[in-house]
Image (cartoon, rainbow, N blue to C red; front, side, top):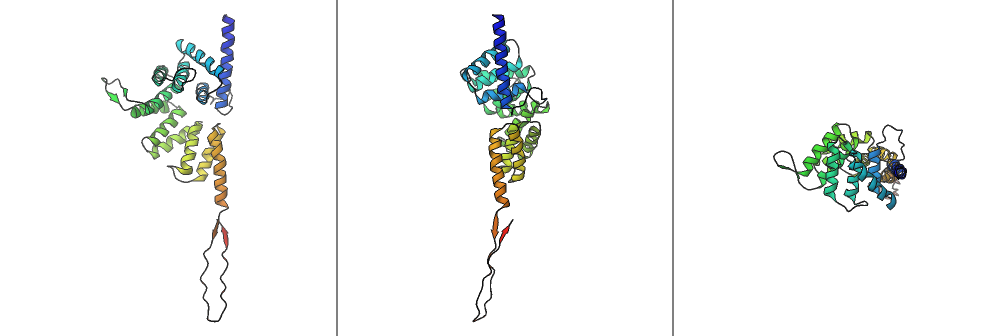
Length: 263
């Protein structure tokens, strides 16, 4: 029985690693920037076949009970999204908080993001209550300071959407994008394409390229669209207004043909 459980564990782990690598653009474990926990969680959010998801639930439940902070965070994702378990955001929050308190930065980011999207939460300050957005910012700020690219990205997104602080947001999103967080690269691209950061298709193109290179499907889609937009802009024509022609009485008037000029 023990050998069977060990084999099952290895099979589940192999499936999850494959899912994680696919979710992170096909990277392999030997790459320094490959974050197995983050990639597996990303894969879980995308969903998968029922057998793999069920096996993941069992594996993460066992791991969390043994004190594995990463497993608690991954199990939290399953409760947040209702994957092979009944959706329970409060349970997800508890699991994220538990793993975060064990020093798992990925869990802290999950926790901060969930706080920013949820209800009021109690603080340790004599039972006072802090608005969840502010508490989420505090948690994400700490993760960002500790070097978590996704933490910086989620903080940047939060400041943009909740606080409308574009100056701080663009700095954080750039930092996250450079750190390999493809969602931040995509958000930067969209905001330079048709959003809060102006209308700069060349900047948008650069960020969509980074997002697509990181396996972001919408980044790849918008990369094609921005290429088309830039090509159209470069080949656009401007028709000159007809010039006024002075005609002497009895003379033929010939209006000069407008010239098409390429921008």
